[in-house]
Length: 168
Image (spheres, one colour):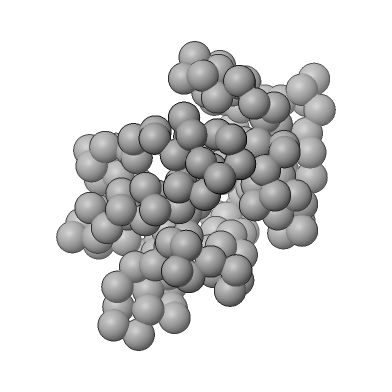
């Protein structure tokens, strides 16, 4: 497997990966997350054009996982990282996070940030193992506060969520 930039013809596959990865939420009593639509193609195009979208591709160069990021308050923010269940538990997500960390370092960004569910094993506990630390709400930057507000408006605060930060 290798990491490469997302190509435009990958975008529908990214939606398929997100749908497949989301199904595991159904098993832990979060069917609303499993049923949530992936980002529209137009949004994914924006990440492609910004140069903030990568895939892990298999030997046939087909994407099996992806990560998209935003620049938020001087840091790179993980907007979405999804791994197809057939490729899960093989370090693929960590590979993408480490790739983003290297990219952020090359841009001079001091940290990676993300928002995530606290009680989902492959969310906050996983990110903690990848070097992310919980952020106290009083230390959130204006951009992170806006992200949390959008998430709450989308109904994601039905389950406990936090911001996390990985210093680089």
